Image 1 (cartoon, one colour):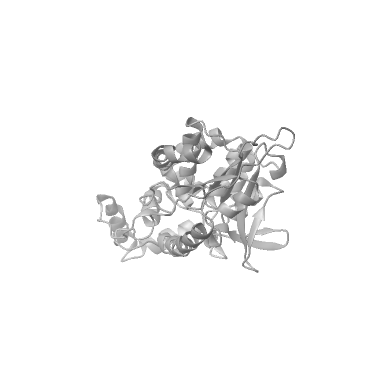
Image 2 (tube, helix red, strand yellow):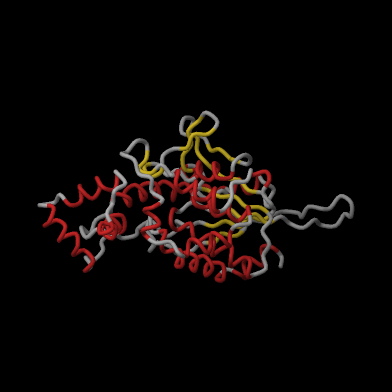
Length: 330
């Protein structure tokens, strides 16, 4: 636990000023819904957050929290299905990413909020990476949804986001758990959430399930291995038939080949890098409290497992409540 030093004093009364508590939410694709559970756990424990920042999916949840829409997001994500997830995928033949992301951001603009960051009821900031310079960029003003979209552009999955003449990708490439940003925003005490601490070493060897049968049937109908290529062609053209939905889900989630899927290869390669960067950055600039939900069982695109992810986040907070109360002096 990091020592915070002497408390600030109110210049008018010479009494210690209340410590500002900041929440830094890390990257983690579908595991990002766990941040909602962390926020719920902190609320239930009576811990007041003064400012919030995030990287990638952490930026999305942090943005909703800062804007006062965490209840709306909570209710919405718990009802997500695979059909909903595919509905948000405005897939193009690969350009600089499989998914454009416009459908998702448009939904949030219409249903939740797109205020200017400087007008939010709670201080907020997002981390993104300048694709040209490779530098970390902190977005603290302008469109909330633009900041979130820039922060969550995972290479190979979401296309880079253009902003102010530059192209931006996932902030997790440089700062997966933005403790440094949280301190820069004025936090005296930083609570940080690392969603990928247990992801490395996860086995890809899964037993073949009965659900694999439709793939085998499909192979027979389409002719010697042509089913998957035809399925992908339908996916890239945005013309998936209802009968193909469950099969694409298995392709993205759990192929019967017992090896890593395309999405797992992309995501895990990024996570290997992020895991090493996170360890280094947290060692040099540790938070006051590090919250570690157990989420290795939830895959890259399994946004439909929000109930489990949120539960894991709440449980992670419950497990360290004594440490939390000690850190904030409550």
